[in-house]
Length: 261
Image (tube, rainbow, N blue to C red; front, top):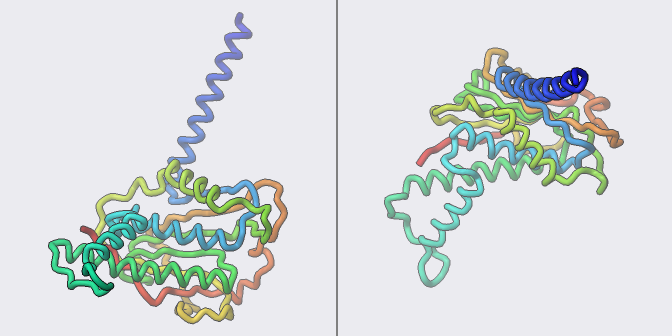
């Protein structure tokens, strides 16, 4: 009986230890602002762009720079467009409702955000992009908060054997919310958001502005999302072979301005 009792106690102790380990990981993630997401295999190059675009939408909403999610904003815009059309033709009436201000701000923000997303796709098609920054604040030199998406440890593979992007996205966001990356976000003032991406200096991108001498300030609130590949899948880990000297930061020429209803 004593041996059985000790065995049961050992199991309970092990379960408690596992729970404590999970709690410790979540607590460290909050304190350090660092979240690791390990995918069980290789990913496609275009998947990296999808990760970044969806994370940008999420960060803008979670930091209260947008009053609703990106998808909700699109629906709201479409509804407003329908209600402002004349019965005949496609000519739109001048907007004169009490919701003018919200509608116009939503429209302007969506236009800028969609422009950024479109050009991010272009950049990813032209170059390997190991890291992207979402810089919140009035200045890139002295920002209020920075979110980094680090993809250097991702193993890329251009084949159908790579993980499905949708499955990776589910794992990514489940990890972010399990580890409470946004738990410290409270009511904050509206700010502008600038996106910066590390890419090859000769990739041929024209829309982004090259920032050769950019250095991220050390004394700034920074949260890092590290994406990596686990498992035994073979592929190409590009950071091991790229020429670091030929990679520079590129900055969006527009700022995504936060707004509220």
